[in-house]
Image (cartoon, rainbow, N blue to C red; front, side, top):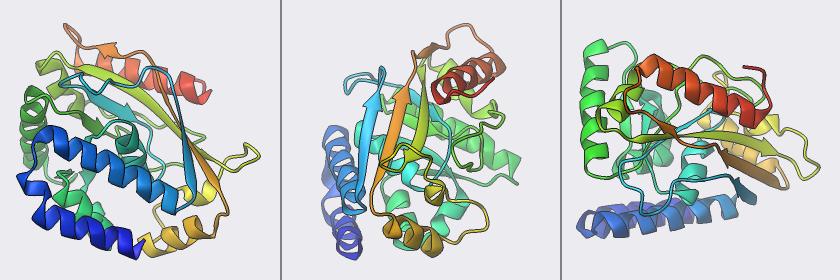
Length: 236
């Protein structure tokens, strides 16, 4: 992990700023997939994930762990909207910031408006933007309310929203609750629990994309949540 993080720091300082958007996506996907392999996490993907050539897409997923960012990016390199607390996660926080993560302060409404402007610009440039509409993590067996405000840029850009369901399992198919980055755990405690797991399967499933044209953001949030709930087998 230390070596892989150091490699990321080196690449982000020296090579990454000079690359085209397409080459950056290739590097982010490779680095994310290798991170999962180092932690002995195998990923299984199901459903219609956004294609590499789809421009201006949004991925909206349930939130379980700090690993979610890298799991999604190993499938489709994605610029994420994340809580500012991610910056406190040591090297991982720095890597997330340098790789283009958009951070939001929940207590500052004006900052949320600025983030929406940045997200709209990223979508207009053809980037794939990811968000966790619940705002906090769960263990993967419940689904909280989806906050609708950050879906507005998708509507403004007629971007498809791809609902995604994330679940971490042990080899016997049971839910691996140790992966969850719950509020009372520190980043280092979470890392230790993940490393102690002999093997984990990370399942990410995609539902049919939500076409946002002509919809209100609350409709988009409700429709997206319903499809994520169906993927998780949770009553909506």
